[in-house]
Amino acid sequence: MMANKMKIKIIKNGPYEVTGGVPITQKKIAPGSDGVLGLKKIKSLSPADPQNYHLCRCGRSKNMPFCDGSHEHAPEFNGAEVADRRPYADRAQVERGPDLDLLDDDRCAFARFCHRQRGEVWTLTANSDDPENRREAIEGAAACPAGRLVARDKDGKIIEREFAPEIEIIKDPIKGCSAGIYVKGGIPIESADGKMYEVRNRAALCRCGHSRNMPFCDATHVSISFNDGE
Image (cartoon, rainbow, N blue to C red; front, top):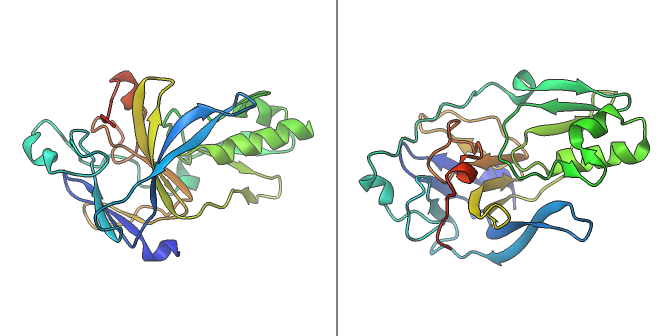
């Protein structure tokens, strides 16, 4: 499957329209055997039309994660896109370590995958002259589903894990809530005004309807205890 044949279109004050047969799964945030948080698959999801389906963006559908038209009866839902549309490289700050740099645009979905056995990714980067710290920093950055964190070597090469195109609907039982929509593998995202966002290997979209950085997740689902009913 080629991501360039797939697309997510944001409908003005409506759902995400997903075309091109993007695989969709439900996953949960859970600790691995080493205690580090990651994703565990719950099940594959089967839209009525796998080639063209609509995902809820207002947080009110009774057919989660799919749209059931509830946004049309929710005047309080404002899906206006306010996120900074500059390229990631222009938004991100650079944390420089001895053997690794870390790019950080502060676009956090609160997955907590940046917390590793040996410490947080920022601390590990600052101490990346230790090979194990460097390895852990790279792993933690690459695991960030929002694409907030990106590791870069001292030659300026981005170190990125390759993902197949996929949409993941996330549960966060540790925090007792439902989390965002993780988009992997370079699936293009088109805004409601027809302009394209920068294609990223990793992004996290809001589905609780309350992000202050629409269309991207800003972790508000945690503070409002969003529950999709699934």
